[in-house]
Image (tube, rainbow, N blue to C red):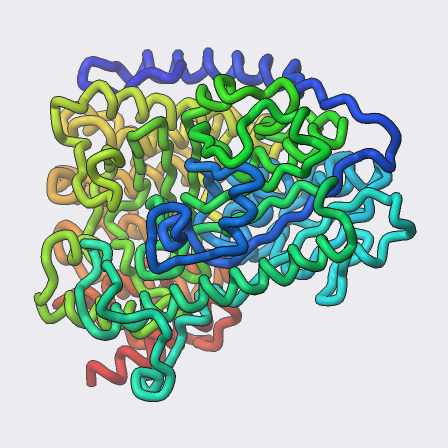
Amino acid sequence: MVALLDSNDSMRAHRSHQLTFGLLWGSIAITLFSAKPMAVQAAKEKPNFVFILSEDNSKHYLRLYGAELGATPAIESLAREGLVFNHAFSNAPVCSVARTTLMTGILAPKAGFQYHRKHTPAHLPEGVQMWPSYLRDAGYYTTNNSKKDYNVVESEGVWDASSKKANWRNRPSKDTPFFHMQTFGVSHESSLHFARKSFQNNQPKTNLSEVTLAPYHPDTPTFRFTYARYFDRIKQMDSMVDKLIKQLDEDGLLENTFIFYFGDHGGVLPRGKGYLHETGLHIPLVVRIPEQWRTEIPLKIGSRVNGFVSFIDFGPTLLHLAGLNSPKVIDGSPFLGSAITKAALDHRDETFGYADRFDEKYEMCRSIRKGQFKYIRSFQPFYPDGLQNNYRYIMLAYEEWRSLFELGKLSEPQSAFFKTKPVEQLFDLSSDPHETVNLAGNQEYRAVLLSLRNRLNQKMNAIHDLSFYPENHMVKHALDDGIKFGQTHAEEIRLLQQTANLALLPFEQAEENIRRALNHVSPLVRYWAFTVCSSFGVKAKPLLKNAESRLNDPDPLVRVRAAEFLALISGQDPRPTFYQVLNENHGELVSLITLNAVVLFHDMKNGYPFDVSQLKDPDGRNEVKRRLDYLAGRLEQKK
């Protein structure tokens, strides 16, 4: 296993253990064998499958999971004829990354599709396809209505039809088994992008006074209105689910069709979508078991399942139920089948989460939840969660929340969203479901912290996490086959991971290795060394001279990280470096990473307002344009 980065660990021992684990994992990966598929008879007797996805809602807003205002009678009827999964997770808290994880069964940082939205689509390994292709090859009619939002190049033969008109009713014959995927967008984030006049003209049906707010949200009319409107959308979504179920019933298909209802990732109320908290990852999942297959599923109909399942497991589950093997490259495993008992499911108690770029906002975070404990690792904790994201701040609740913070009118749990984060956070969800009490520094939980830290390091090492490369490097070198690239560059990735993990040591133990890393021949190591310096904050003051000497580094992003560190710790103006790097035109992604730092200092109290007119070519594209438009607008406001 990967060595724990405790005070008694040496970096040499850490490297040795990581190498051993990497070699062991490589051996396991080669010999990995998928679960034995269920036996099925003729093609016409194969079960049908329907996925019903509601956009942008975590389990926290459904009555099935304790939210009394979230009544969903249609979904609840599915639960009475099937199973409710208490612990289902999307792996990623945003659409494109979560959906690509779902449709490939592959962890995003392993293959290079972890950024939302994609700059360049990743390629799956040669011969590997999205898993509906394997159903289609086995005679299934596959349809999608209609959202895709993939971060990988879609392989040929995934869908027989994908459009707003796609439906199982168009299959060649009534004997043809089918897989239909239906997305309802009524609960999407955009549904909460309303104007102030809505307060008078479009009052929610949900009673505002009955709303219970999370403790990290301020209790204001805006937040109550936003919650109530969201509950209204949940009810509308349920009516759409009901209509689809009735269509299946009209066609006489219910008794041979597995129906999966779930959210495509967490909810959109502030601090949900885009973040690795439970409200970003923990989805509702209800599976209706058809009558013909209830004897094949050794679970009690109408019961709740406590075992953990994630998006990587959904594809293997359908393939297993259809009598097919999963490709070895898939990371998940089936959670329904004749040999999968309640006892077996109860042993599944772990899920892995990842968040990187969300539109124009960068930050690399990873999480492990095991049982009741949740561990979040922030690799750039000096970027607050509330750092500007244009699409997110269209929501009035987000804008008001930030304004109240700037006015000093929030409690500590409500203010945390806009402040620097700890490198590590540990939460006991049994007593702290809202994840507001960080136990990482509590000695009573030291063993838990080290165990989950170690497990996360193992996981990232095992998948050769490509986010240790800045996105510009990954896009340039890795996306033809990210999995193969990670395997062939495993040693380099381990070195970058070890450098990043210096932030977990006491500074006095890490300092010597940080100094070496700051002068390393690899700019990628230097990049992470300065990121570590900024993570340590004022403790890293002894390294300021090293940063001064790197303001002329040949690598533009090393310069950005050095300037960032100097500004955070000594107050040195970072703008000359930022203007220089942006005017050198190193490409869209280098500009976007630089602008992430620009916005941090631009928005800080007594920060460094950024003048877009200083740029030689201020007309950016896509996410770069979002940043430049925001900076120009904010600067005008400050004047």
